[in-house]
Length: 116
Picture 1: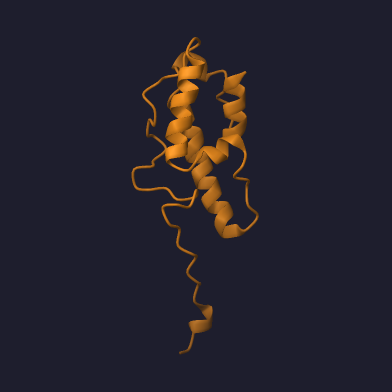
Picture 2 (picture 1 turned 45 degrees about the vertical axis):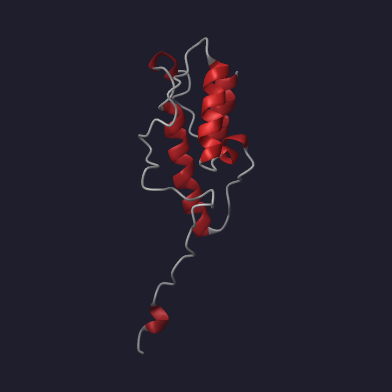
């Protein structure tokens, strides 16, 4: 058929086991942990967040094992997940502490900054 060569190819589908997958409930405004980080409960917060992120196959983004890809399709998906992670982390930080890390846009850097 005429014009078939101009068709945009379908990107590969992402399945739920792929770390780039975000379900309909995985929105940036979600609060994925009931433990709010305050000055005196870092270990509790860290453990809660770690379990929440691991259960979603996303902890590799904050620990640095899921690297930013160069492939255009996966780069866009990585960025979407990455931005969502930053918001999830910020949503669990007490507002009085949030100013200290409001400039951080990298999930692994944010994770490290909060540990310090």
